[in-house]
Image 1 (spheres, rainbow, N blue to C red):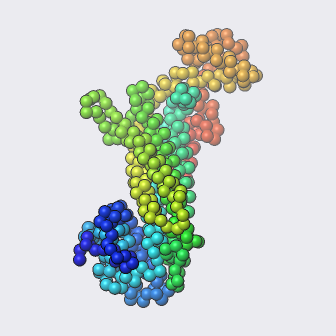
Image 2 (spheres, rainbow, N blue to C red; image 1 turned 30 degrees about the vertical axis):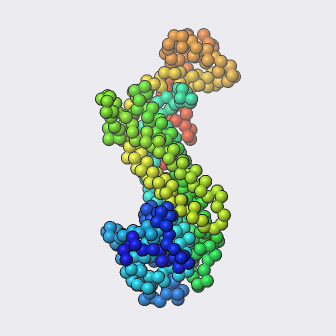
Length: 465
């Protein structure tokens, strides 16, 4: 009998007729859950090892099962495995292939477990591995940001609020602001990993098992911190998947904000940075176009990942304990969230170190918009003027500058003194862009020395990951 002709003998004994062909396809998950095969086999090897330790299997049966599972894995990886929709999922396909290889001993593997605790274990094993890979890519992106920030610590650009010129900052300082978002994301990712790293194996269908299993042993063999504490919760919990998707949504939200700025900065209207051609595409009709497709796609994929989070929250919101077939719908949103996050991080980690700042353009932009107005107000306060009065004085000087189409730093001392006699020749030390950023010489400030120190601290901290 071929794989496609098989019925699901693992559970079909109670049924008097075969499953409808459409229902088979509708309820099967093998189309997407076969990516769990390595983790399913890993969990089965640990389970067989534990059953032998408990005396449920002989050592010979254990070895036969483990050898068979390794042979099944080799078949999958060399492409000779025939997946069957009739067998529903990765678990049944692997078990059926195992039984074909080693005979009746393969049917003993499922003793003391259920597909309910099996799938919960597989997903945790798979997601833990993916989290570690994502952590590496996130770290690579942060390293690129911090390195570039150190290089651009003294590159002056306008800082914005409401997308209006506010105060001068440095490009390095701005990049480190992005890093702060990512640092929080990394912490959330590690929190998620810590909470998922508990083994549901042994919870069986929902109530545990009557066999003398050793859940501590299987947890240890699979590098979990400990077994889960309640069998009902073990098979029905998908918090770890939701928590990962919440992390993914927030990470992509942050990357979307970065993307928006990159898109603005590459436009002719800003022209702050250059993206290398390999991260851009052109237009089929407008030969002059260079489109920032990578950040645009990351910005677009954020909506996709946010949707997956809502899907999982909605999936779980009305489920009674314990396992329900609804939970089959947890995998595709989770799988796609992981794939999307990995791709977006890889694209950014490759692209960010290649950014080229157009320093003169940034500097000229910072000269427009009266970005040192607050510095003038602070100067007056240090001269004994109340801040609200200083605010009004500077507002009048800005209005004069608008009329004259000149920045504060371009005015003469006599012109500035018409607004306040407290203004002296030393005012020009604070009205320069360089003086403005250098004056903010404190932790978290935009002074170049502080930016360099902060970039070094980030790079040093990343070494311990």
